[in-house]
Structures are given as structure tokens and as C-alpha cells.
Image (cartoon, rainbow, N blue to C red):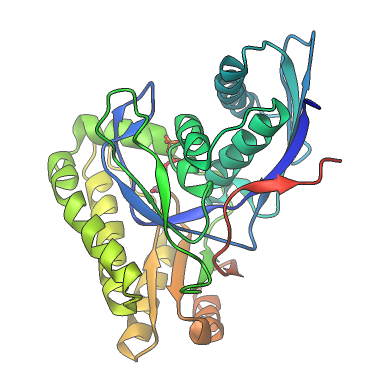
Length: 328
Ligand code: DP6
């Protein structure tokens, strides 16, 4: 092959959350999860393998970052193993959204990296195989291989080959919109992997979380297939608050919210009480994502923008999975 390729992938937002691992080496989740893939936020990644080159050279938004480079090399190693090569790579990746702001840049980043790297090495991998590889690099990246509404299965096999994402419903089949309220631009306090480890070791609610997830997945899957907004709103807020309650009960407690995050939650609920089809979700950071019907997006954005401590409000629809881009 040309040893050179580029791909784009978008972040996804979990509605039924992934939190906890049953295997940290294969990165297998303690629970299944369901997400939506976004469209106007993206990561574009170009990978060039160079025979004879020993090390990887990584540029993220024009900068180098040691911790991120190590994760990228570990991910490229999985692809090199598959292809039976040992070439170093030049990786250049751009996000069009703030990386440290808790917007799941690892999901779009590793989905784009696996997609581009596999292409560059001439590996013909199915989307499911790409999802498995992306999962090993960052769990949530397994979901960004696909577009629209996506479920990532817990899986039963010890080797993790059945812990893979698959599409539930196309983006166009139910084109909800998402407003993202940015309430802090600081890098996140405790990363997801470390937060999950601490939670599993110390939170007394861990087993209740794992035991109740299957029912939540059934409820959310049914709501999505029926395009039942109210049902999806209820189960999504429930899963989000349950994940945070679980993490807050760790020692020391993981408190990802700031005051504005909580204000946004109340505002979203007040809007819903007034009949506006909108619900919230929050990941391992202080940003609030408000998911709404297309007709409600301007009203939701205006309401969030009004809240003291909200620095910016982004807006996006639902989009496609990872795909090839022209390589420069
Ligand atoms: C709160 O996928 O970032 O966003 O597998 O350790 O890389 P690793 O974790 P990551 O965790 C995402 C956690 C979450 C919930 C979710 O996306 O389901």
C-alpha cells in the first residue's frame, strides 16, 4: 500500500454510560453503553508509516504531548502487530473543538487513528474489527467508528472480540440535536481511566451500577427504536445521574460538576416541564450536553447561554461514523 492515509471521526456522547472495566489490558467494559455520534465536531488524522523509522512522531493540533503520544504509539502497535510490520509512523491530528474541555476527544481521536492507520497499512478490517481495535485504545472510541445511535456490547468472551459497537439507528432516522454548554476550559481533573479505577476500588455502589445496567440498555434501546423522546430523556438523565452518584461515592469522591453544570441541569429540566423536548447528560467533566428535538435547538441554546458561568454554547446534529479523507 501507500503507507499513507487520512480519516475523520466524530465524538460521541453516551446516553447510557460506560463507567468501569472488567479487563484493563483488553479494555473490556464492566457494562454495555449506548451513544449518539455527533456531526459538526471532528478529528481529522493523517498517518504515514515510514519503513526504517524507529519511533512515532505525533503532532496533535500542531503540538506534541508526551502522555498522548504514548497512547497513540500503543494504539499503532496493535495495527502494526496485525500487519506484521515495525515501521514508525508520522501522525498528525486536528480537532475543530477544544481538546481538554471534556468533549470526548479520545473517542473521535482513536476512531480516526485506527481507521487511518488500518487504511495506510492496507489492512482490510470490517467496521466491527475496527471498533474492537478502537476499543482497546479508548473504550468510547469503539462507538465513534459508527454513526447515529450506537450500542457498545459488554460482550461475554474473555478475548473481548464480542465487546464491539454496532449501529442501532441511523442519524437521519431520528435527527436530534445537541447543544454543548462549555462551563470551563481547564483540563479535566481526573481522567476517565483513573476515575473508573478509583470508583471500582472504593465506591460501595459499583455492584449496583453493574447489576442495573442491562435494564437501562433495554429501556434506552427500545426508546430509540420507537423514537420515543420522553422515554429516552428519562433513561438518559437517570443513567447520567447514576454514573455520577457512583463516582461521587468513590474515595476521594469524583466531583466532575461545577456550579454552572448544576444550573444547566435545572434549566434543562425547567424547559422540559414547560413542554420543550430536551434532556441533559454530563460526562467526566463539567460540560453539559443538552439533547433536543430539532425545533427546540435555538430556545435551548438561548436558555443555556443565559446562565452565569456558561462560557460558550456549541451546537451540533448527529452524524456518520469514521471515514476516509483525501490524504494531503
Ligand atoms: C464518562 O472511553 O475515555 O465519557 O476506555 O479509559 O479510554 P477509557 O475511557 P473513556 O471513558 C468515557 C467515559 C464517559 C462515559 C461514556 O462515554 O460512555
